Image (tube, rainbow over all chains, first blue to last red; front, top):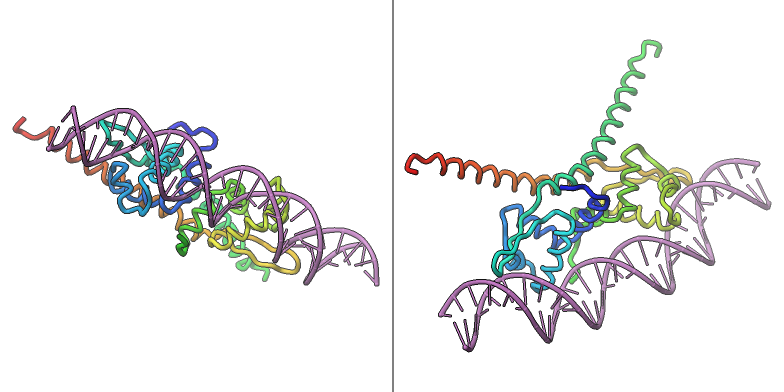
Length: 113
Length: 113
DNA sequence: AAGAAAGTGAAGCGGTTGCTTAACTAATTT
DNA sequence: AAATTAGTTAAGCAACCGCTTCACTTTCTT
């Protein structure tokens, strides 16, 4: 997956919509056609196609059309990328907290107190 | 169609904006005041405050005002929650892929072929 | 060949978002 | 006490989003 600038923007934008997250959730359980994706989604098929375009543009979902049915699958590498963005920030903060804890422990164990 | 958004909705909505992600990024390096958050952000202080409200409502950022300065910190537990949402879906898919691989290997090693 | 199924594209509409400016409060400096 | 700093709130506006309907194509099924 080529990591062009803006993919993170596209992915987080794509994940911001509850309907699209529901589609990702469905696809995490296995491939599905557009109609299958639409089925639990109280909206028109057309709306689902539009959401799908957003997901595909973000790289989170890959689709292939065979005959008249388009089959959709999630792209785990793209999911990892979003996951990593969050994880990187979280661990940076937690490392900072750890250093602070060590420093405080050091201070209170100082012999001169 | 107004449905009560849960924390996951609020968090992914909050993370969808590049400016807010930049604020989270800044806060991952340590606490900051509102003005410090605004400094690299080519927009008015007022706009930054509004972004901050979105981040705080989502639980991703905690703030505390002392005197006239409000200090902001990120909430790693909230970050983990978003991280876990993605991770859960990704690993579900990857486990599925693994099972499929095992099945295929079994089939091609079948003696009767 | 006729009809149904699966999806696509365009136009349009109302609600939401991100931003601005301006007027304001409260805390700190001078 | 006056000025400055730090932030807050409200009003308003342009752009964007999610959705609908309708017209359409392509691919199966009968």
